[in-house]
Length: 139
Length: 356
View 1 (cartoon, rainbow over the protein chains, first blue to last red):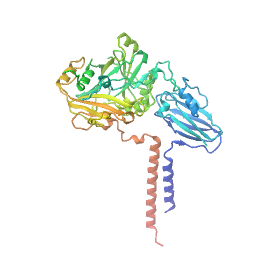
View 2: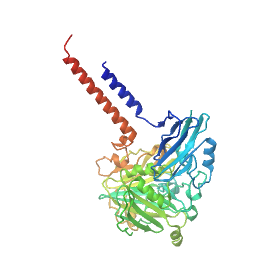
View 3: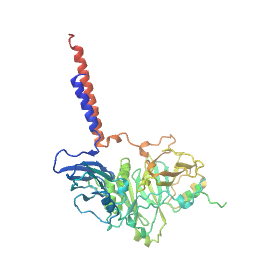
View 4: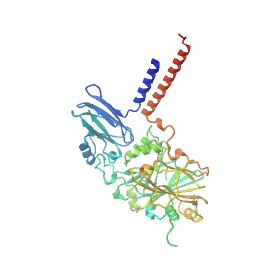
């Protein structure tokens, strides 16, 4: 097999593997990085985000839907509180924000230094049950 | 003949969104106010198709002032030429036909819609109902609905998009509680509405019935069709079996409409359009929410070819809607083409290479 042919095969394999992109991997270096999350049809894309312990991430969340959504980062207990909570809206504080219909909002969150996992979700009526949640793996 | 009670038979729920009071802000899940709770009201529907015009007759049931302002968004197969009050008892007469007793408008001014905004085609009132016919994509119509106090459940964006891709015409309906009180309309009372729609491909919206439902919910609906000939439908209906738990689109009645039925319907108020002869089909919709993924396309021409697009089956270009999938697919195709060209060049070179 010629060198060019092998190169072409490798290119095909790389492109094939790169096509599905629903998971965001951790950045290689230290410092703040930006993760873009799109909300479409009441679902997050990506719905899995990998971060490093202690990393600070700037989440840019774009809501393409004609209805309001939320982006709330926290562990299961935090999510449970929000699911049962009564806050009419979420002011922009680290890891918690409302994302009105057709808008893009930004929140910055510093993850714990210990490995583990968190959840990001929307707790507007029926949204969590509908599947509006994702996982953040800290490793 | 079916034995369901009349109350249960009034089962075509087209109410798909609930109006919340403007002051209510829905955020955390616990804040499900009574007005924000999804509660489908039940209506009955007749889709009659004759001379290229679909009469879409449905009834909106008043849930009472205490339940909040209940509103609906109904997808339509075309732009209606008129939205008027339906016959006074037509729907009940149809129910009676399939379950005999045991005993022997003002048109809106031409609205100039901003780019991307829903266009208001028609505004009218029928008794205590405020009716607005809109034209626009899913985002435009959804935004209009949100701006006008409709509470849209989380599956609304996808469902509205499902319809807008085929027919960007929607009818938003809401009760005016103040007018209902003035007119003496009490809780549970239905208001029939006749939507007159010229169209070549009539269909009945079914998937919209799942809006706000949860997986496993049984969607029950009664659909009556009056057509010139025996219609073919897509999805196809099934004959009833003996099982009381049968699910699907069950064809309970398919026969020439009796003269007495048509005479009765024609004698109802505003129902003079009912033809002299027609074929009556009664479809009992009993489908789990997650399985009700399409609408009911109707071919009443006798050729037996209901339009798959009208039924909402995926259009051919659907897989390319997702940018990531599209880009990835084209990249792979380009790479394979590139590889084949290289292979061909290599083959030709080796072919022309002098033998050593």
